[in-house]
Amino acid sequence: MKAAPFDYIRPDTLDDACACLASHPEARIIAGGQSLVPMLAMRLARPSLVIDIAHIDGLSAIRDDGDALVIGTMVRQAAALSDPLIATHLPLLAKALTHVGHPPTRSRGTVGGSLVHADPSAEIPLVAVSLGASLRMRDSDGDIDFDAADFFIGPMLTLIPPTACLYEIRFPKPKAAYVGTGFHEIAARRSDYALAAAGAHIEADAHGRVQDIRLAIGGVSDFPQRLPIDLPTDLVTDLATSKTSLAAAIDTALDTVDFVEDMHASASYRRRVVAELAGRAIGDALNEITAGLA
Image 1 (cartoon, rainbow, N blue to C red):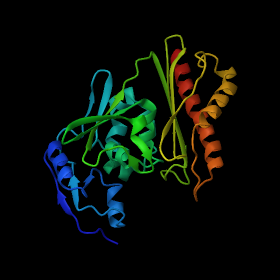
Image 2: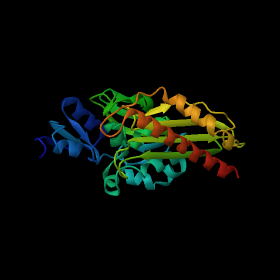
Image 3: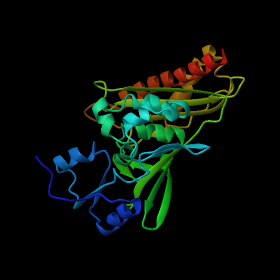
Image 4: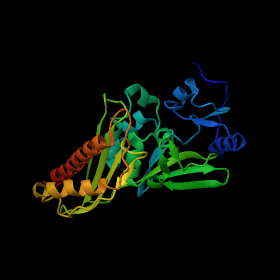
């Protein structure tokens, strides 16, 4: 099957792209094309106009903005994976990117495209929710910011206005003395869609006391979620005796999740697996902090 007929335009500026969206209600933006092109080929998407934003200046940049790391929507996933700023300031994203698709798809797929596509099993949305990222987009009325935690509302569904274009993602930079991260997922085959995934980001002070813990899960419900988890501040220095309290805290947090059931896995299986993955992710993060304290 081939795509239904559509018009194509390659605007020079972000404002031009927004104007095209405003004047063509059935238009779709194409970034890397790793999601949209298959949908076009299967006629699951039938836009009247495809707007190519790949050549707009500034959308492929990664920059340090003081208290935040700003990633342009057109940054290729492969470029993000190899970027030293992301490795230094966003190690959880760097770890998650190794699980995204395959090397050929990462070379074309974009950070912004994954967020807007909003697949519940995707790794980048999970990390954005976990780290409290802010998604900045523009329409004909100006800029709009959304917290990642509020942006995803269902499978392939977001709060992005139909005439808006995501152009950058702002990730807060950690300020603690020590940061540890962990990311784990399970899939039928490596690089397949995750049946369950968990990412953890933990910050500790110079004495090893936990200051902030962020745990998010994906692939188990309609959208990625950050879990409300409360752990003792001495978790790092007393890890051996904290495993029981850690498992209990994860189990309690999972009570807030509406697990999905489909042909790939039952809801009960997803809960059991994601609980294990969350424990591993937190364990990895704590081990990194412990190694830093040594």
